Amino acid sequence: MAKIAFVGLGNMGGPMAANLVKAGHEVSVFDLSAPAVEHAVEAGAHSAESASSAVDGAHFLITMLPAGIHVKSVLVTKDALLDKVAKDCLVIDSSTIDSETAKEMAKAAQERGIQFIDAPVSGGVGGAVAGTLAFMVGGTDEAFNKAKPILDCMGKNIFHAGGSGAGQVAKACNNMMLAVLMAGTSEALNMGINNGLDPKVLSEIMSKSSGNNWALQVYNPVPGVMDGVPASNDYEGGFMVDLMCKDLGLAMDNSQASRSPVPMGSAARGLFNLHQAKGNGGLDFSSIFRLYNSKSDSQG
Ligand code: NAD
Image 1 (cartoon, rainbow, N blue to C red):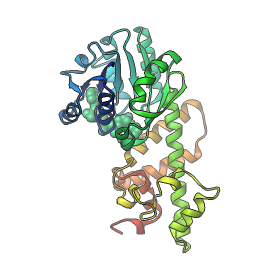
Image 2 (tube, rainbow, N blue to C red; image 1 turned 90 degrees about the vertical axis):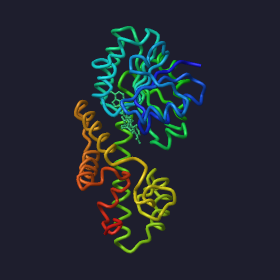
Image 3 (cartoon, rainbow, N blue to C red; image 1 turned 120 degrees about the horizontal axis):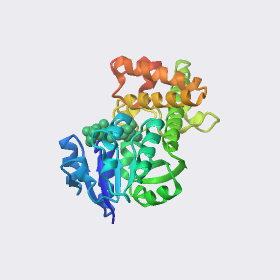
Image 4 (cartoon, protein in one colour; image 1 turned 90 degrees about the horizontal axis):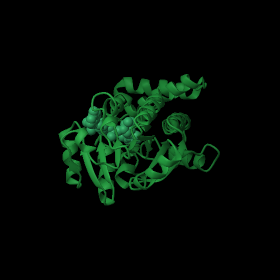
């Protein structure tokens, strides 16, 4: 059993902390939101008075925060937890942030003799609740091996992507590809529908042909084609357009920093930003289908 400090108990962090409690760890939590802390306490975590007191005696510190600016504030500027954790405490940031800030945090930790890994996740709130997240880790072999048993309590697939920042790069690559696939799948299905095809039949054909992809297999964007997906629930639940736009912004930063051409990713970013600007930021990202097919809009 390890003593774990967990900061950031939102849609993802809350259930992740609960899974650590279920696995038998002693989890001390902090969040700026009182209701978020209450949920974690109901799941068996201990509420800390401050971020600083949460890390008292902790073997691991896990952060699950909105963006790089929050991670920096918690670790080095405002709360400065890197100055408060024990030297043998491993710091794991699972937030999706820019790889530059992740590398900066790893360097700041190293300067203080502390180990840090970036470990963003894929799998959404459902994966966080079920403990089936995929973790993409950037850091040393030693830090990865130390973190693995803890990450195993919250996820099913734990990958070591490379050195510091590599987890964030892997996450940006994956989500950019996901955006391209979802937009492309919506485009093709809409063209078929407008040419008189039944979207169920076309989906079946393409999923058994060379156009097959994850969106067609498990996340069809056309309402009524598949049960249990956001498209068949007015695009409620799932992975919000706002978060996809955030991740595509991070992908663009990566492309600029490495001078990698991303014309498909840029096009997908433009489509998702337009969809967001039309007031759809809170819908699941598969609602991009509505940008092509306004008849699928519940108001239309
Ligand atoms: P969220 O907004 O639900 O939760 C963030 C939490 O951080 C909030 O409870 C907030 O009060 C807390 N917080 C912010 N600043 C803080 C501070 N200084 N000290 C303490 N607590 C603070 O976000 P989420 O959906 O849980 O996402 C967290 C991260 O995971 C994000 O980086 C997101 O991009 C990533 N992510 C989300 C999903 C998803 O489906 N929601 C999937 C994969 C990755």
